[in-house]
Length: 264
Image (cartoon, rainbow, N blue to C red):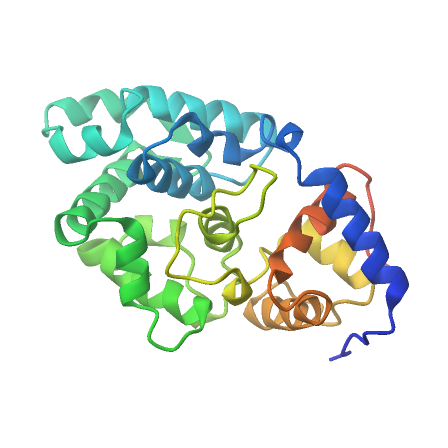
């Protein structure tokens, strides 16, 4: 594993410039983070964010469109809908599908949210209960078991990634970035105060991985948990307090500027 050197000023300056370019309110509209930005209530944002991150694979316009449609199916009041809707009303969700995530999966998620909020004031409290090791990836694995409950062995379980089995858990790490990162730009929410942004792990998908490898921030060829740990370790050398802000730069360079890996 290549360890980034603090003397790599060209990489640092490029990434800092691209963070400033992409970490702006203009980023919100066409990104899945637009879905939780519909709300001001913390619990609504948690639910909308978790669901939006869950369906965040495929074409971004389709993700955003289906995310907004999903909120409309939840009567644009996700927390109230989840906590008060009976079995009969859940039938209204039968029309929802995003790729392999369908209404059956959505109902399992609703049941998981209901259990969580019956036991915890917020989703943050439920996550933090599982944060005993201080490692966000371990926290995800432990929380996943509580959230899925009896559905742990069912088809729905594949929609909640498990870093304990080597997954990069890109979508949950993205959700956690939304909830935990805090700055003055207004993109990420920073509403989870029990966690520090320094603990976050970089969301890793093919675009971020390609750019990271082209910049020699990442040597591992597989986008898995070990790659997330390697990449984040190097990003922490650039900014120990807020390493995952560079997700904006890496993702933006890949999606908007078409950077490719030097290995392809």
